[in-house]
Length: 604
Ligand SMILES: Nc1ncnc2c1ncn2[C@@H]1O[C@H](COP(=O)(O)OP(=O)(O)OP(=O)(O)O)[C@@H](O)[C@H]1O
Ligand SMILES: [Mg+2]
Image (cartoon, rainbow, N blue to C red; front, top):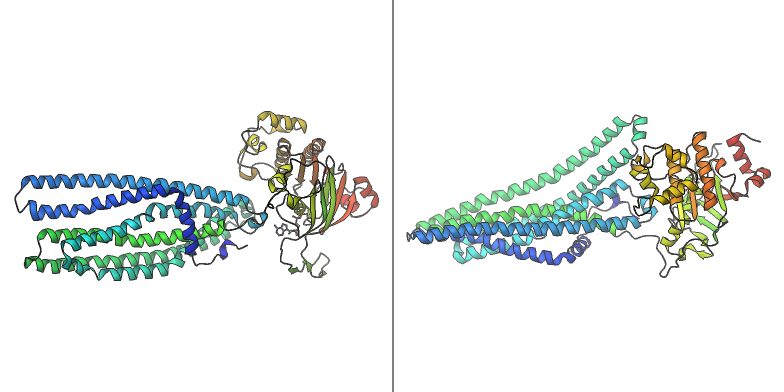
């Protein structure tokens, strides 16, 4: 899987165009209507110089007051009509654009929600947020500004030339050399700026990721006095962005200015040749004025081309990056006809499971152990031949050193990752054959770094699902005997993002209650590593004890006080199960577990 930073600077126009086209397709009626308005509005707009010509060449010379009045009236009505149609056109495009962008955002969010955990361990969320927000916005400009207007401009160029050629071919020919020059410029400009805009978008995402990441870790930043250092780094990337933007924009302005120079040349040409031909009475004053007026309109689309190009560049580089995300395939998928389960009936079993996160049989040398000796190189197995069985209704505890592979066991059980060897069975069925959704809805998870959403504690207990009745929450609190706790911490208390205004112990209690509120019978509790004060520890321990009366539990614990009562305890070290049994037996065996226990409680 590729990191978004490694996406090449070359835009894949074909794929992006396909994406853009597929987004527009469901709204084709709106775009067709916009086209119709556009043809009408442009035609109306182009009629005005002809009216002026009529006034100058016919109404005034023949001294026909009525014709003059009528022409002026027509001119006025025409302009009002033009503005009205233009309004309708703009609204059609804005509505279509907003609809498309909303759909695209939904599509991206849906897609992102289904991507594997391994994708997220490689891609910073800040960058993905930038994709969803700013890149879709860049595409919006394409749908409202360019996708249709570019045709209007081509139509306008064609129509103006046809009208001019109809009234005077000779004078029109004078303007012809302008066009090869314009198109040469447009082409060169596009070629040069295309990679620049990709770079600008990339650095934009980098900046938003930088800000998100450092604000997320604000306590570390402040505690270690990193503010100056981080703000210097931020200055650096902002300066990089500044330089890149200036470089791209300078080219755009230069292009615009060069094109601007063509206008006086053309006007000089028309006045020069046209003036002589007027003196020679070969053309009328009306024709001359009409040409000058059309010349103004002729340069409108030409100027706009630079705008179009920069919008096309920007939006295609945004679209390209969106496409790169949308094409990422879910790595873990259900089999074609998966089995569905409605909860665990009998047991969960791990059978000789081997797992490593880096799937490419690389060899890794581990860091020197504390003694300073270097261990031999070995394949990076995180779990080695792990087997155990949990019968429904019983509780299983897993203990062991940090990094030993405990959380990895839960990652496999929830199918966040797939093991390389061995099998995981639920009621004797391979979990790879069971639909992912039904596996996950059969199991509950209280994660180590539990995430609380912004909202009231009550909302969090319902996992933000408003349809869960309050009574269910009160029931759960009752069952695991946490009434006192929630008297102290009102259910209406607002939790900020990630539960930053709560202590780890409090968050853990909330997460446990949340697990009780939800319906799963099998719960996996991955205990937080931080130490708690004896009082909170007692609350948590009791809550787990009460929870185990109602649910089948897999408890991953750092504090042995929580697991003493478990029916079976596994000691996991370096990815292997070194000891298994209940607390008493393990203590009697005087192995690693008893040492572990002694070190925590200083008991013999
Ligand atoms: N997403 C990941 N990608 C690559 N390696 C990982 C990933 N998650 C964990 N690991 C590695 O796998 C090993 C086991 O990690 P795991 O999280 O299972 O340990 P743990 O026993 O839960 O530790 P702790 O007690 O600290 O929670 C560690 O060496 C860790 O660095
Ligand atoms: Mg862990």
